[in-house]
Image (cartoon, rainbow, N blue to C red; front, side, top):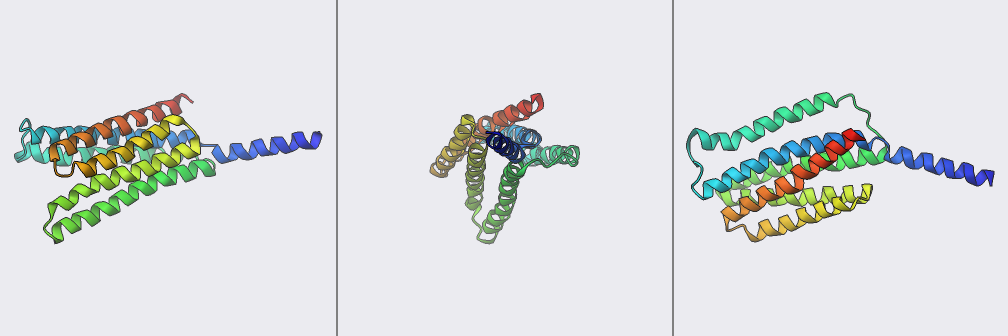
Length: 205
């Protein structure tokens, strides 16, 4: 009996070592996703207004709509990285989960270059529309991994939402107004809100 109890304690300690440190990782990812979803969601809403002729599509304002969200997000992301540079890495599960989201982000940047080059080289601006579709697909994969690691049902719903958005954007490729509106809603609902939840939840924990 004593051996069984000791073995159970060892197993529990091992499981804690696997999942330990996920709070800091969740706070970092949550904060980054909150600002990314908010900034780029608003940007897509402004693009949608441009398709309705309710926002200028030329001149300084149109240029600001394209540039300002990225400039702000780079600044926010830099602050997050500096703030969390000395944070503990956590257990294997925390590091693996963080790596999945970081890998998805890197893949998005790589694909941005690929689509930008293709659109320029083949004089086919429409190719660029496939980049948001790929971004949504990578988000679906990352959130699905998070669901499997953390076993929280709402993460599965977020992953499903991203996969559904990927299909919707593919179908709406010929309707740019509906395309950017769906993308805006996805960013605000599937990135900003979940980002806020895990960011604030981790800070309370």
